[in-house]
Image: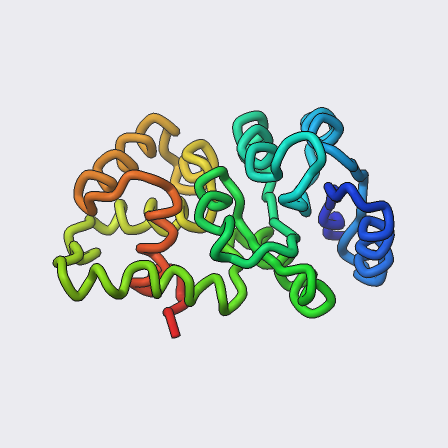
Length: 220
């Protein structure tokens, strides 16, 4: 029997947390294992409980959710952090991805997309709603008309595999386990990929992978 997906909630509003628990309790394969109302509680309990997925409000009273996401990623990169926020993607999406986040859901669409996002990130996907994908497209389409973007054809088959897994949110250690390679070898592949594509940050790799259909999802 498959174990339920263990979810942890981070939001400073009790009513929001209660509403999320009611929504997720209807899903037989999802279990809410804890909750926190501020950054300090979130970091401490996530490290202790090691949930599969954290639903993160980006507006917390003591520290912003992006910084909390980054600290969680550094402490346990196997935890999938999904932003559940009222902020438009233009405000925080790219910073959130760079901090280690793997999904971005607007609170107004939580009833429609939240469960889908949880399942997607557990399958190794980056979950973005249409406005998030369109933001990345707008960010890069204009420069592309002026400068030549390097084709993914410059990558070897193995580098292509590693790029896809990095963009899906896996750590170098997790990729190494999947490909039966050491994490140091994966780190070397990552360095080669960033050099060949002339990219630096994880968010840039995600954008590149989406733009070139490496994740099986194209820009509109």
